[in-house]
Image 1: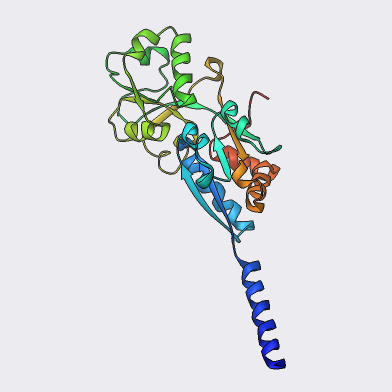
Image 2: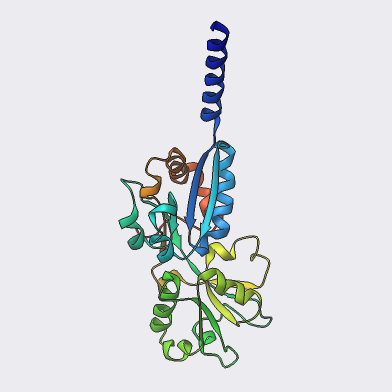
Length: 251
């Protein structure tokens, strides 16, 4: 009996060790324009948190915001503070930085720095944008064209795509002449050596706002709290800028 009790105790300790060593899992939801950025960020996070297993779901902000509780991400990276605020648990809402736009082309001979005349030029027949109904960047594009007094002509050339990443891919494939594309896509490895781009002057628009937050699904997750702390750290700021998310210009 003493031997049996000893074996049971040993097995219990072994089982406890396995439970303690089990990796913490975290599902992160991110908008399409942050797909390349989240790949870089999670790799850097893993350097100090190898015990955390991260999975990423890429979808438009409206889709992520309406995900059912059963399969909801524990942490979200969105491009709209207004959409994010009602979803945040406690004080987890974290402004990452500005969502900037650039004019992008992969068609030889097009000068993306030409300014307003580019959008109404006869040789521009298509302008790729994220769908204004779901993408803050698509809505910003419309407001910029209106401010430049070229909306009536430019709007006839708009080619709305389901999301910003799809718009960027169409321009890269030269299916569309130019596009108004979020900067985190254009600084990524997939785009920085393909075509050319010119940042849209900040005086023309108020940037979108990239934010991170813990959802109700992640409120008890140590991994979600650790990832938010990582994003808030001063040491992460240069990395955020590197992946195309500069410090917010509007508090």
